[in-house]
Image (cartoon, rainbow, N blue to C red):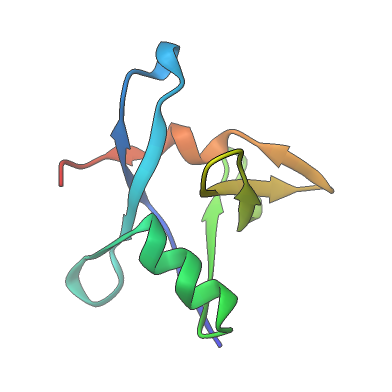
Length: 93
């Protein structure tokens, strides 16, 4: 299983209006991007795991959270769901 660092996200909606992450990306291999659906699929198949580094340099897992309508990606650390994924740099799809 590949462990991949996520350094940027693409959002749909406004942060104050319940924005949701629709894609993730990173610097590995000159830059990469994938939709949340693609990332969820690779996690569920055991192909990849994703992580980010928080402001203190602590590694946080990016895990799948089941929402009322779809699966989401969200940071997880210390046994808790965290919003650190939303602090990453943005890119446009």
